[in-house]
Length: 408
Image (cartoon, rainbow, N blue to C red):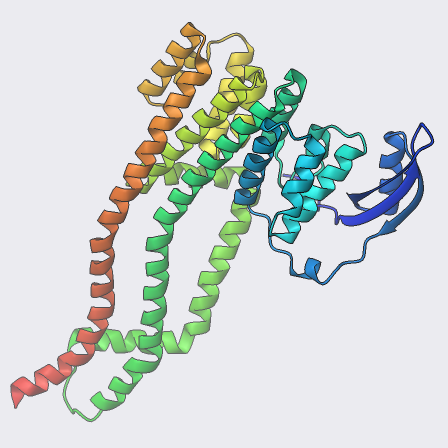
């Protein structure tokens, strides 16, 4: 598989030039080089006179990372501004200058400068694929073409907010047990490396055989002290290798995602979340007037799971040959009968986006309930796990002492 090309480094440039009417114009642009700025300006009908790289200010050195949540908030603010009748360039300036994150502020004001230079919103957003994916740009393009950009941005904002909410719930469901396992491992490592050796020195003067559990723990402590660097190195190396391979190997993504969907409890939550994301994305695209085949391409990219990505691509291929959406979805075997029936009703009634929205609402509530149930179930399981691991080590160290007390 070909390795993805390295993303070019963009810098901010200020420029001055003359447009087709002979008017002096100026602005700012993010680009890889001065040559790129000159070429872009000429394509826009501007003759560049002066182009200079902007110096980084002290504030720019403290940039924060732009998160998906920032894009969701920005989209909601922009939709509100446009619905209030504020011109698009002015809306970008108000939202950009009012943002607390310098990175987000720079991104928004850069898009504003592109718009003022004559670039349409879709093209300006497309210059930043890291933050505005194909799905986002396709929806904006549909809104611009239909003259309903404010309504489309409102739908995009709602979509982004709901998707981020469901992602947050999945992360919170997985974070708690993962954090507890990590903490338990660290505490166990500290006990094995520093506490148990003290007991080992104490037991040497007992002159009696130690209980089997105590001997096992002492042996484990010795092995851990002698090979701790190998153990930690193997764990870290395995995590890095698996993560690196997963990102670059579709086969591994397929295998891991299939196992994840089959995992007890958690697998069902992820499946429901994926169906909710599929339904919400397709409903938003279809409501915006994006053709179904084109919409399914974006839906596949937003699936978040390799199994559903491949299933959506299969649905797209079937629909492009004239098959009904509900029949194509049923053929994959990935969707419950209720979802397929709702889609069938939507197709027959001409309200597919409404039915898909109802499916998304239902499965988002299902995810909420499943995460709440999982949290309640995990608490006693985690307490029992910690009790067995930490308590087992403590009991193993005190067994010889109890044995001596019974003898006396």
